[in-house]
Length: 452
Image (cartoon, rainbow, N blue to C red; front, side):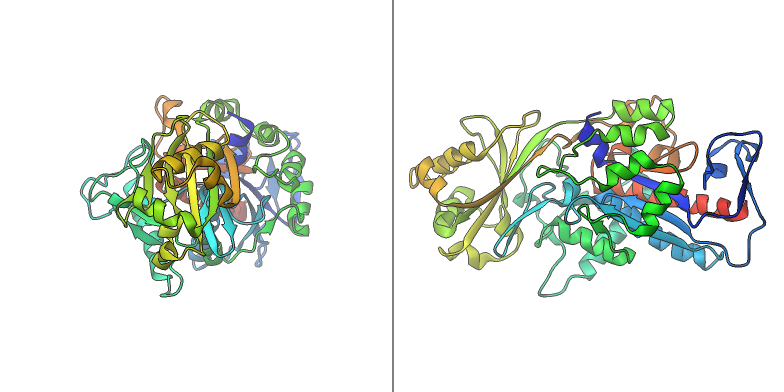
């Protein structure tokens, strides 16, 4: 598993803070852990004992690292499950969230902006299953309950949209390119565009979770920094604080920041999961090319165009303005045209020159490649060395269990939970399933901690 693959994993640090009144068992020498009892075979394995619980138990603190899709969903499901738990038991779960980027992104929510235009430089659609279709039976680590939960989240996002700002817009199958990863099965899969970028969806999830992440090296909030110091998670703290570079890749080996807290079996699984690599770029052009582009796309409803470029580097072009449902932009020569191009799997090459030649060809000679280039106003390129999942966890584990140990990984000492789409399948559904499993594991840890 590459360095950036590790950075994509949503690593959860579970600890109780401030430190409860505890005493060390003379039979054990390792450090105090808040959730060890919930993940060992018997209560005798827990290295700690604590005084009888007070009538006002201390809050159970959780740190969510990363505000990609899985991280935001973990924060949301933690909030929802914590609220449910609070009605039954006097337990308070406090959630802190940290992110090294400047906004909630990850591979799902990365965007480029110029003026009033927004372009998704990662995921182009949010996809889920139609719960009313008899084929939506689950599988590959996603259960029926996960499918229903994903549908509920999507329906809530749709209901939260206003007439002036829609979070999601249903994408018709004929608008999409038939890539090898995308599921276009009539009636079964439902795809959605985010008119204001996928990052707007992540912001809404964080809003529902009632959390305010700390972004881009502004430092962890004091209570979180103290938490990591007191519990000996020094490597993890250094990784969290250090910002990513302009390509969103970490500047140190993030595997070293997490692997020491996992068992040998868990390390084997995570190292064996594989993603392919791809380049994704956003290009903003002046409106002069919009008419030629519209002729190339032919169908007014089409957003994505599969292309065969001379260099064989481009998989498809996505016309972002059409996702935003602003048709008047297409006829306004003074406005901006926003295009996103996805490169082919297995290659990390700049795509600008290939795009210029492709657009020149699509314009049928109206513009030369050099003329196309002169109309470029702005661009952003991301070399995704973690893109599409090609070796999921189920291909590594011969007989994967169906419970949370399959949908998320919990370290034996209970300090870390690792969640992400690699646990199930590379999709919104997979992230929902893994995030909910992580939230269940946290609640279990909180209950056991209270009862120690």
